[in-house]
Image (tube, rainbow, N blue to C red; front, side, top):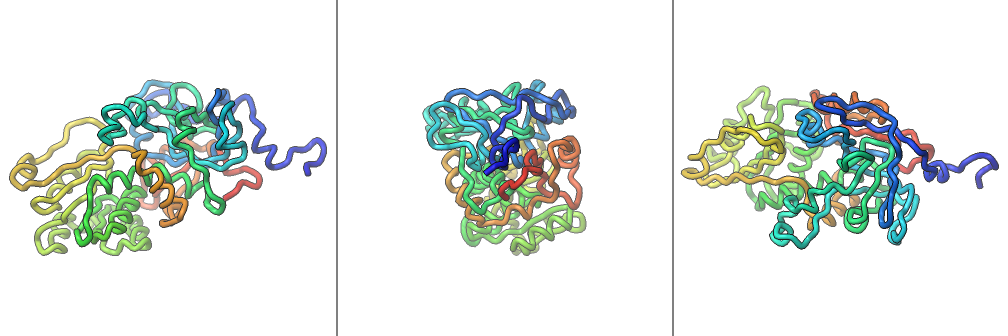
Length: 374
């Protein structure tokens, strides 16, 4: 029982101020820590107090390219505690620990009927905001979760699972979708170029499918982490030719499939050259439109298949939740840096300029909560 004049820990968590701190995007490479109003919620909605939000490469590309109008508050790999519940919400209550998706499709349109959910117009509408144009909102203290996300895109975090582990649900979903698109078969050899956190998750999921996985990265510390997670065949691309090495490891043929988990178009040709005739290449991180040099004969004459996968799939939501909440992989080990919201600018700068020792970077608005459940 709280002493008179003092708030209990639970009451502190549930008390909602009028304003909050947020990392506000104001233009190209211009993100500022500002005081903004705490978003108001309506019927069917939730207000979530953010604990942890991972920084995603798509956030960084939007900030660096100016592809989206300002002001906005980005961040969509969000976990936290429900601070307020709108009228009509029966399945959640204040104090529940949750992770929220920011996209959920309509399930009825042409694209949904063909299971291309990321192309659905409803899916493209962002259902979480910390203010301004809805853009995820996880780089703030509180986020408003809109009704269709509450119904189908809010997941309760089980006891014993940390906010950090839980915030990987959405990125794991995107990786599961990529693996499903590639359709690796047991006994095949899959090359994964890039061993950042997403590359490692993709590698682990490919190995889970029964394939032989070869990893490649310029940074030895990243390969060390992937080896610790059971990905023993690794190529240090700063010292060895990836294409040549892969062919040496596959009787001269090349890999059956390759996953490019590095942003930009520069390594597309490398991935194509590294697979055998009839092989497949999945472009996972290439989310910016632009010119890319691709050998058309590799597709036509060598019968290689070029595939793409973008964002998450609602059909894989339960699978991603089971994988993360069941701790099939200790995802917290991929977090190298944790920044408080007050240092969000430093966090975004490091994430945009990765170092050999940097992996997953998270911003934690709730890192100083008294008695926060980890």
